[in-house]
Length: 362
Image 1 (cartoon, rainbow, N blue to C red):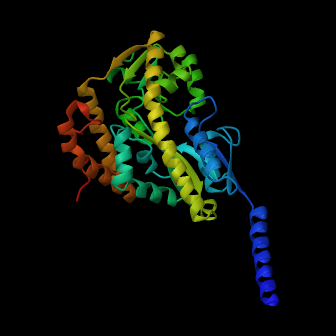
Image 2 (image 1 turned 180 degrees about the horizontal axis):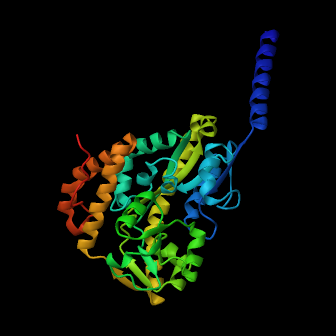
C-alpha cells in the first residue's frame, strides 16, 4: 500500500512539475507590426486598435510591437516587408498594391463600386472573404479585414473645379490604378503621393487638386487650411476596405486558438472603427464648412459618364486576369441579387443600383 501511495504521489509531483515548468518557460511570441499610415493620419487608429486588442486577448502567447508608418520603412514598402517576414504584420489599404497584382486595384476600392455596407455584405455572405484570401495567398500572406470605410470626400482644390469638364488638364492626387484609368479617360493626370505629402503639394500648388479620405480625416490632416473648394461625391472610392497583412509563416506558427483570437480581434475592430468613421464624418464636414470651404457636386449625368468609364475598366481587367474576373462576377451577382431589396427600401436603404453592368462575355 505504501509503495502504491508513493507511486501516486510521485506521478502527481512529476505532473505538476511539468505543468508548472511549461507555463513558466513557455515562450511568448513577439511580432513586429507597422502600417502604411503615419501617426499623423487617423486611419492608423484601426491598426493600433487591432494590435492593442490582440495583446489583451493573447497575453502570454503573442505580443505585437506596433510601429507607426514610416518608422521602420517607407509606407509603400510595407507589403514586401511583410511578405519577407521583416515585419510579421502590416496594416494597409490594399489598393496600394495594384502594381503587385492587378486584382488589388479592385479589392481596395473601385470607382462607382461597392459602398461601405455593400462591402460588408459582399465579404461576409457573397464570397468576398475567399477572394481576399486567394489574392493575398499568392504572396504568402493572410489578410484580416479591419475596416469598411464610408465613401470618401471627393476632390479638394484652391481653384473652383465644378464639373467633369474642369478636370481636363489638371494634375490630381488620387490613389488607385482603376481610379487613374478613369482620370485619364476624363483628360486629367494622376499624381501618386503618400498621405503625408498631400498637404504640402496642395499648399505649394504642385498639384491642382487632391483626394485623400473622408471629411474628418481630411480635416485632421489640415486640408481645409490649404484648399477652398470641394467637389463631391467621392466616386473614386464609394466604399473602401482596409486590413492587416500577416506573413503566412508567422501565421502558421501560431496555434489555432491564437489564430482564432486574431480573427476575433479583427472582427471587433471592423465593427468599432467602421462605425467610428461614419460618425467622424459629421464633425469633419461641419468643421470644413466652418472654414468656408465651398461644395460643388457632380450632376447625375456626369456620374453616369463615370460609371460607363469604370465599366470599361472592369471589362478590360476581366479579360486580362482570371481572379479579377471572379471578383467582378461576384460583385455583379451581389448587386443583381440585392437590387430588388434596394428598390423596396427606396430612400431608406443604402448604396445604389448601377444603370449598367460591365460586359464580361460568356
